[in-house]
Each structure stands twice: as structure tokens, then as C-alpha cells.
Image 1 (spheres, rainbow, N blue to C red):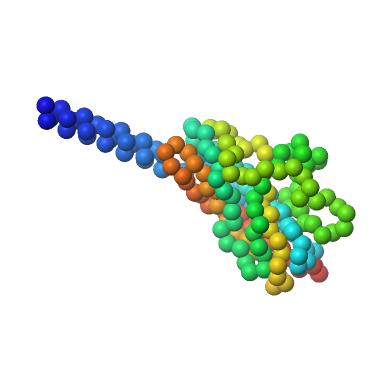
Image 2: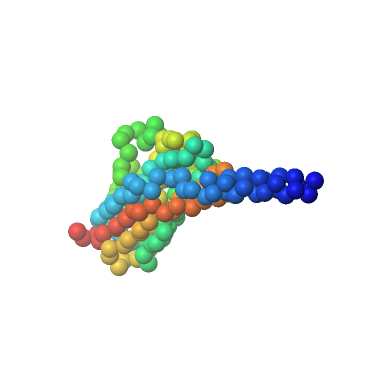
Length: 174
């Protein structure tokens, strides 16, 4: 009887260990990083940069928790990341936006939703676009943000992946 219990216990441990190992693999597409720049930006302006596309490589759906920059230079304050539906943009989406240039397009007036809770199906890309919103608070040019960290829940636990991306804000006098 004791031998059977040991065998059953070992089988349970092996199954759980295998499930944890499979769940530990990263799911987000690590490639597809980007380098974007924007110029003629002044202190006080808000800038928006397109985040790398969220692509789920795993066989399970995942739920996004946060999308944040990894490093941000002094003078560039990260505000938040939001999800925008392409249909609400009314035109081809921009790689970057800046406010404060007169009566042009203002992303703050476009319908958007928080990143948290957004589901990405198995083996698919997130169809809406994610934009990172920054505020220019300094004047030491260039201002740089590097790396985008995607935090998400899949399977049994939370995961976090860093995708290589660089965003640069150049001086108002190019």
C-alpha cells in the first residue's frame, strides 16, 4: 500500500512539475522591436508612441496586465498605456503622435481602453493598437525611453517579457 502511495505521489509531482515548466515559457513575440523618433516637441507636450505588437505564440489565451517602458530618461514621464481600436482612429494609425501643435489631432479625444484585462487569443496578435503615453517634463534633449515590458497572466501564473524598442524625443529646434 505504501509503495502505491509513493508511486501515485511521484506521478502527481511529475505532472505538476511538467505543467509548471510548460507554463514558464514566454508567450509574447520577442521579436518585432522598434525604434521611433519624434521632433519639434516642447516641454509640456504629450507624446504617444506605438508599442510593439502583442503577439501570443502559445497555445493558450493570455490576459494583459500592464505595458510599461523599461527605462525612461529624466525629463520624459510615462503616463500610461492605452488600447485603441483602429476603427476609432478614422485613418491609418500613426507610429507616433504629439499634442500641443495647434488644433491638430488629439489622441486624448479618441476612445481608448486600459490595457489591463485585454485578452490575446492563442497563436494570434492583438488586433487593437497599444500606445504608450509620455509627457515631456524636461529640456535635456534627446529624451529616450527604451524597452517595453509586457506583463500578462497565462496558465497558472503571471509572466513578464521585455521587448526591445527605443523611443526618442528630439529638441523643438531640429
